[in-house]
Length: 406
Ligand SMILES: Cc1cc2nc3c(=O)[nH]c(=O)nc-3n(C[C@H](O)[C@H](O)[C@H](O)COP(=O)(O)OP(=O)(O)OC[C@H]3O[C@@H](n4cnc5c(N)ncnc54)[C@H](O)[C@@H]3O)c2cc1C
Image 1 (tube, rainbow, N blue to C red):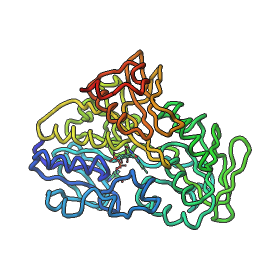
Image 2 (tube, protein in one colour):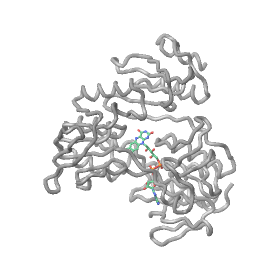
Image 3 (spheres, rainbow, N blue to C red):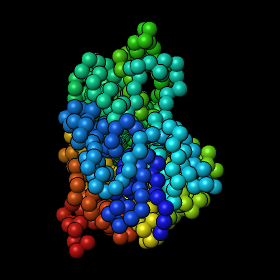
Image 4 (cartoon, protein in one colour):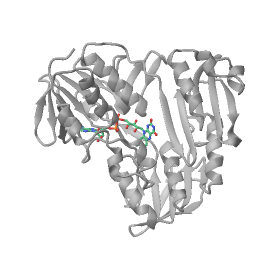
């Protein structure tokens, strides 16, 4: 239980939700939500989907209207935190303001990994993480004809679908031998590679960008490591993110590939927690240290720390899930798609509706579903309670999955 004010650094998915959960769980102290962006707290997933595509407006991104913060006595402070004075329990903002804290929650998220090439700072070399970046892309799309996307991860491919839908010539380059290689099975990579290629997107695998060509300040193309050159008037870079760990590091807290926290999401300082994309947490479920970039992780970690701050201390035990919308295919993932040694297909990729059940030493560890929401829900429930399903049953479409849970 904490007695002094809770100050949340960062008003993204994790920061907003911990503020909301604290009030929902009856926390009576002051809650400050430090917002480093110029917009009220908003969600990122639509930025590479419905928002950049132009089908929804900015109001649909907001977690809650302004009245929510007022009615819930959540003080939103615009600005960036520049230092944590741990001995005096004070947070310092760039504006010079300082705040006393009882507990600090670092929800500082991550930032774009930048392309380290000449010309990468030209206006038409763009990224897609913030509302401003999505807004900028949305407004230039109608006037651009050829885009090269660097990186075939979730965000790069979601944007590729949107750009192709808008009639652009789209090329995607990727260093790995298959798309989304770090996060999905070869079966799911193959399905999306085929679908994107059928939609007219050209995907170049096993190559990287060696230079960006420009005519003055106008981008003209990208050269590849295999000697080819792709013409482009727009380049979108999606080569991953870097967690924002500097504030914690400068305050003397342990950091590695994230702010290091224990199974309760506490840093080495009992008055400072870290959650969401910035947190490298100890995970008993997977027996490892993990840093995840997902809505589920941000929300469940926010809930776990809010509960602790009102006196219900429990280790974090979230069950990962994720989704990505690309063209007419919705991919949903339950569990972590790593370390598996057997995969079983349920349904058929050719019919654009299938799931891949992943097993490690005979135990179900993850399910990827494409346009099969019911399999995904089943997977989340099964993995959540630590149960498995025999591979031959998973493969048998006549077997009713829900009978296992009944
Ligand atoms: C385009 C896009 C699409 C996505 N799609 C999906 C999806 O389909 N499904 C899914 O599960 N996940 C998706 N994600 C991932 C998901 O949005 C993130 O995992 C989630 O936003 C993480 O929340 P967070 O609060 O930890 O970090 P962030 O959302 O990055 O928020 C951190 C905030 O902290 C602020 N900040 C940092 N340092 C300071 C400081 N010193 N002072 C003040 N403020 C600071 C930052 O400016 C930022 O506003 C997507 C992400 C992006 C970018």
